[in-house]
Amino acid sequence: ELKVEQNPLFLSMQEGKNYTIYCNYSTTSDRLYWYRQDPGKSLESLFVLLSNGAVKQEGRLMASLDTKARLSTLHITAAVHDLSATYFCAVDSRNSNYQLIWGAGTKLIIKP
Amino acid sequence: DTGVSQDPRHKITKRGQNVTFRCDPISEHNRLYWYRQTLGQGPEFLTYFQNEAQLEKSRLLSDRFSAERPKGSFSTLEIQRTEQGDSAMYLCASSLGSKQFFGPGTRLTVL
Image 1 (cartoon, chains in turn yellow, red):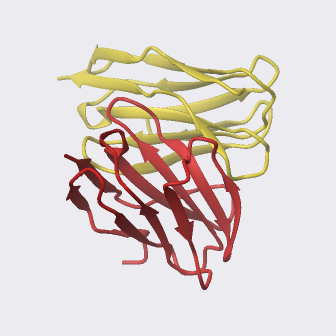
Image 2 (image 1 turned 45 degrees about the vertical axis):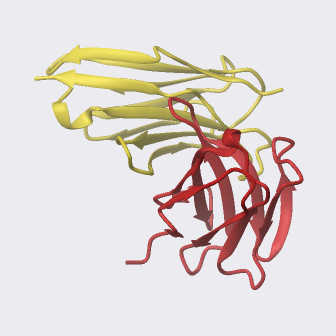
């Protein structure tokens, strides 16, 4: 059974600092997704990583995928308050584009 | 607005009642997904449609749950004889390729 683990589950940090959220998964998959969720809102797609070594960047966020290590990272550079949200990673369990297995989420609070 | 829409946004019901939720995907998307999310957890996959065909159903989905997508456009999720454990946010998503686009969700509270 595929398991997806994120850590940390909760992170409080100061504006301007850098930090990394980790997503480990338990079986082979070449497809990993990062989503953002604001309180009471739905999920917003951030990154789709489709191959080993894939790296994508958008603003202060950068995501990478190492399929051999079964690890993805979401790196935050010089955090700003607007990035406060819960971040989820999800893995395509069958490389078939439909059955995503999700981590529990990392709740990120960025203090001014 | 051409995003995924869900109706209703909130539903409060008494235990034992039936409820039905609707999802309207992005119009050109042929894939539609239902998920359930409880507080503090990631979404759990429930079921998946490609056009009108239901191709996958999670083992988590009991016989009280049924989903349809009759013309390959909108979808409905029905829960019969609701239980308190069914209280959750029900999310619908649609896609054409790899990226799934999510609707705002329907929050179900079973009293």
